[in-house]
Image (tube, rainbow, N blue to C red; front, top):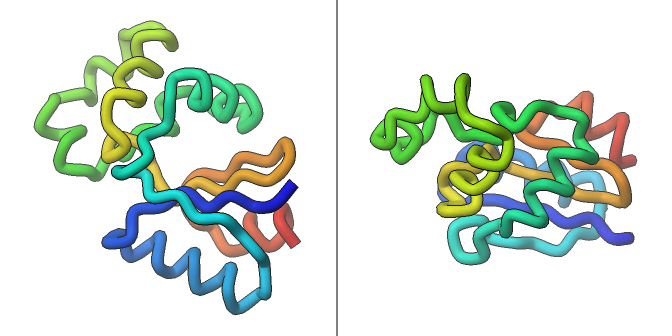
Length: 118
């Protein structure tokens, strides 16, 4: 299965991650998160495969997260409610996301990507 790179082009971390993929000659398909918002089913699958709690999929530094005052909601809402919120707008989702087989990586940590993708 090829690597899928989900990103927001204006995000500096996403640009750094994309450069890393290119510099390491890793072929990938690209998906722009605010143009092709992740669906509930996709998010549920990614969360399950990642082994991370739903809260880790939120872009907590984003403007929309702060405007919607989600800090407390993330602590009390059910997983289903949180996935519904994430699916409502791609800008709420932490990025970049890298998908390969059963690997789901969120955010860019070069050592983690090196270990999981190469």
